[in-house]
Amino acid sequence: MPIDRRDFVRITAAGLLSVTAGRTAAAERLPNIVLIYADDMGYGDLSCYGSAISTPNIDQLASEGMRFTHFYSASPVCSPSRAALMTGRYPTRVGVPRVLAPTDTYGLPLAEMTIAELVKTAGYKTACIGKWHLGDVPQLLPSNRGFEEYYGIPYSNDQLPSVLMQNSQVIEEPVDLDNLTERYTERAIEFMQRAGNSPFFLYFAHTFPHIPLAASSQFLGKSGLGVYGDAVTEMDWSTGQISNFLKDSDLDTQTLVIFSSDNGPWYQGSTGRLRGRKGETWDGGMRMPMIAKFPGKIPPGRVSHGIATTMDIFPTVAGLTGSTPSANPLDGVDLWPNLINEKDVVPHDVFLYMSGWDVQCARLGKWKLHVSRNTSPPWVPQPDAGVRNLPLPRPELYDLYRDVDESYNVADQNPDIVVTILDKMNALIATFPQQVQDQWYAAMATPVLDTPAGAVPVAL
Image 1 (cartoon, one colour):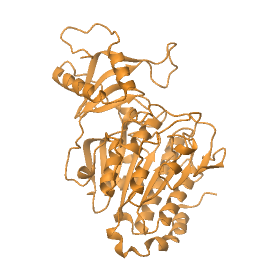
Image 2 (cartoon, one colour):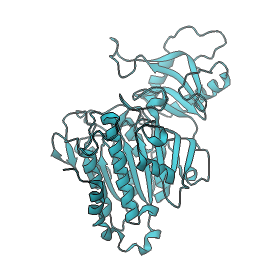
Image 3 (cartoon, one colour):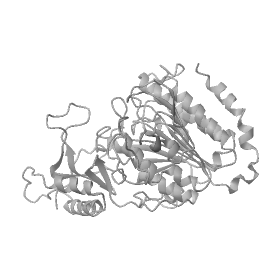
Image 4 (tube, helix red, strand yellow):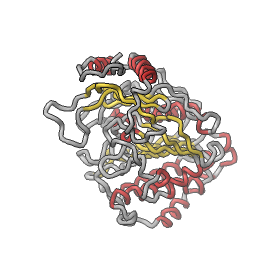
C-alpha cells in the first residue's frame, strides 16, 4: 500500500543516525553525486521551465542551484542518449546509435568506462536505480558496469518482457508500474543510508514519463492535467524525498545533485515552444531541462545560457572526484568552472545533432545549422522505401537565441557562418567511426534540387 509522504520521511529518518555518525571529518571526504534522470521529459515539463505542471521540489533545486537553458542530449532517443551520459562520448563513437531491444545481445561495449566505473576508482559506493537500457545480457547489466547495486527495469517500460530486476535477478514479472516511482525512491534512500561515511554515486533513472504512464493512488488525479501530469508530480515528490534526506542527514552541503532528461517528449509532454519532439533533431527532441545544485559551491538562483550537453557530466564528475578516465577520448568538457561562476561560457566548439549514424545538424554558439533530415518523422507510418536521411536543397541556419522554434532561416544572410560551421562539421566527422563518415559523405553526395544562384550548397 502507498504510504503518506510524512510517514515516508519519518520511516527513513529512523536510519539517519547511522549515516550522520562520525561526520566530524566530513568536510575532507569526496563529494556525493546524485544524478536524477527522467525518461522522455520535455524541456517544458517543469514549472521552472514554464510548465503548468506544479513541480515545487525540482523548482527548489533550481532556486538553490543553477538552471541551464541550452542543455542538450547527445541523441533524440533513449539508449544513445544514455550511452553518451555514461561515457562522455558521442553514442556513435561507442557503438550505440539506436534504441536497444530486449532481443539484442549487444549494448554499451565493455571497453567503454562508465561514470560508475570512474568513481569506483576513488572509493565511491555506487547504485543504479531505475531504467538502464544499455544492454540486458548479464555482462552488460549495471551490476557489471561499476554499479554495486541495481534495482530497476533494464530497458523501456513499453518493451517486453516486462521485468523488474535486482542486480542480475528478475524479481517481478510483469512490473507493477503504479507504485514504481515510490519503490525506486525507497531504494534510493536506503542505498544512501547504507553508504555510511563513504562517498556515493546514485544514478536515479526514472521510468517515467515514458509511456505507458502510471502513478500511485495518492497522485492519480492530483495534477489536474491527466496521468502524464500525475506521473511528473510524483517524480517531483520523489525528488523532494531525496532532497529532504540529504538535508536531514547533513549531507546536503557535501552533495552535487543533477536533474535532467534523456530526450524530448513523445506524445503528451511539452517542448516549451521548441520545435520537434522525441526522435527528431529539431531542438524539441534534444534540448533538455538541466539543474545542478551543490550548496556552498554552486551559487543559488543562477541561470546559464551557455551551451552544454549530457556528455559534459562525465568529465565534470571526473574533475570533481579526482578520478582518472580511460584512454578513450572524451567529447564532453568539464562544466565545473561554469557551475561555480568562474566562467560564463562553456568551452564547446561545434556540437553535432545525430539521428542514428546520421549527422543532421550542428550548433556553434547561437547558431544552429541543418544540413539533412529524415524523410518522415518518427510518429507516422514509414514510407514504402523506409526512412532515409536526405540532404536539404540548401542548408538552413537559425539563431537560437532569437528564434527559439527554428522558424526563420537566415542562411542566405550569413553565408560565412554556414561555411564556418560546415568546415567544423567535416573536420569533426573525420574523427568518427567509419560508418558515421560513410553515412555523412553518402548523404552529402545524394542529388538534391537545384540550388539557387548565389546560395551556399550543403556539401562543400
